[in-house]
Image (tube, rainbow over all chains, first blue to last red; front, side):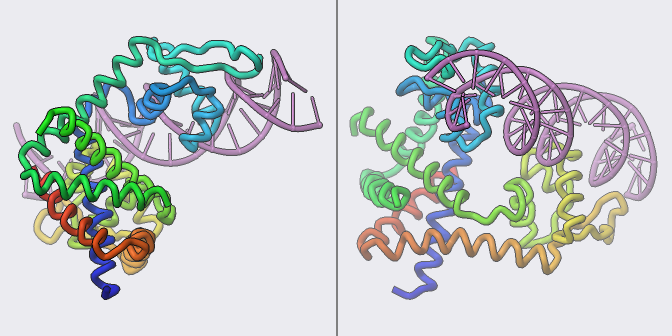
Length: 140
Length: 140
DNA sequence: TATTGTTATACTCTATAACTATA
DNA sequence: TATAGTTATAGAGTATAACAATA
């Protein structure tokens, strides 16, 4: 395969993924800032400590303290004492926080679904296949 | 097509595009901040006025003034008097700015190319087809 | 003594409001 | 009088350094 074709494909894949991400984000509700939503989304599956979140989101511990405090003041997350280590805190999503996350993700998916129903079944199959390939790409 | 399958596909497409965007950005050089690079990338094709950039990037005129001034101080863009309207300024990429843009885009594409060469020709064809579909999706 | 989290402080990016220059 | 851009000022988000509590 010629190098220039590979470069063109690399550029196409990169750009179209960026555009999809931007469109989805733009269509989203803006109830909380992006960095705040990232924390809420992580807490959806299990409780995290502030330190874990800071490392995962690649921000400093003081920044995460601020973000978490803001979410706690709005009643979206709850700080609970760690059962075994008195230094740590466990962060849980409150019912209100959980509802906000599900509502926002649903809005994102709704926008994409509306685009997908307008495609042919063949085009949707192409996307299914491409998702599998791209998952492999980002896993590396 | 069942609604739950459509929802699953919407979620898959959305998430994998977001992950690709994140990986590409993470691999990028960090010579300038993202919002600054966005301006440099726009100036690659033609000169823009500060007002046009503010509207395109969805930031306020004062914010764009600050961003442009920062880039100008670093010698990456140049402000030139508008030939017809004395109120406006035309912004041009300097040779240094142009080099920075091409270098960064090249780094992005290089990362993606390295992932693509590890795929089969069939997988690459799947991505080519998917790019065409997704371009249609984001155009709506 | 090391680790987890917070407080203190400063810098950057952003915005609104007020101002200058030009049309 | 309207428009393009800048300056003034303030509000978020981030970081590093210093501190408190616990292991």
